Image 1 (tube, one colour):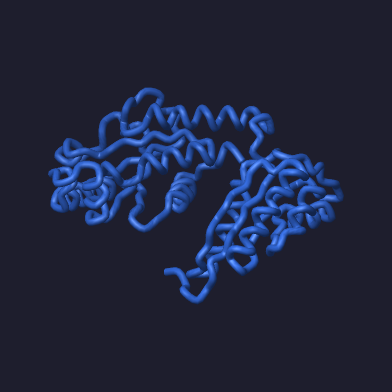
Image 2 (image 1 turned 90 degrees about the vertical axis):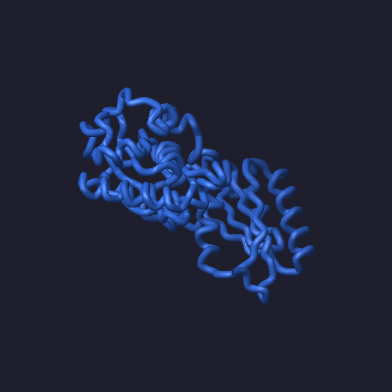
Length: 279
């Protein structure tokens, strides 16, 4: 919970690109300071000195309003633009230069200092194509919509409805360029005590997700309140039956109850031994 004695800090993530890298690393660092209240602002596409000066005005205004220095995470490539940001009344952490200079020394090469390379669609056209195709594949194979081309899947997630299969599939596709299908385990599968026949040939690609029945009931009640589908009794039955089935079939699985999508995806990749197709 927030520390009532710590003042709220304005945090700015500034980049000449999308700002995703600055925000991801900055947030990771700030999570080490438990209870720190923050107010975050992402400022992407800061690709000129004029835009940098506009950022400084906002940062300085936050300093005056909060009466405590803002924290700025900066991944600006252009030195001139970055120097403007360093003139702000804030703690400015230059994430890009922190690593570029040691790399230049070690590699004996000079950085090109080219803006927008990390998220450019033209950086590597094949990687970009892989990402789009992976997303399209995962959407087409969401929730068992089709069993066509399952041989092309990198991984097939199985589990009861609302156990986290869809968001994990899309995250794997978007972040790593992996083709993911997901298939719901349903009462008919439990009655047969067997996997759907369409999945049998792809056993090596299967990975299961489970979830605590109480949490599952909460999630399902948001979608279909007061239904048998969402009842705690039914959720217990489905979860126990799914886990028993996966155990009998020798399928690797984990509980999504307390894990983030990032943790689930990383575990899936490790267990199935998958390599990312985009960077």
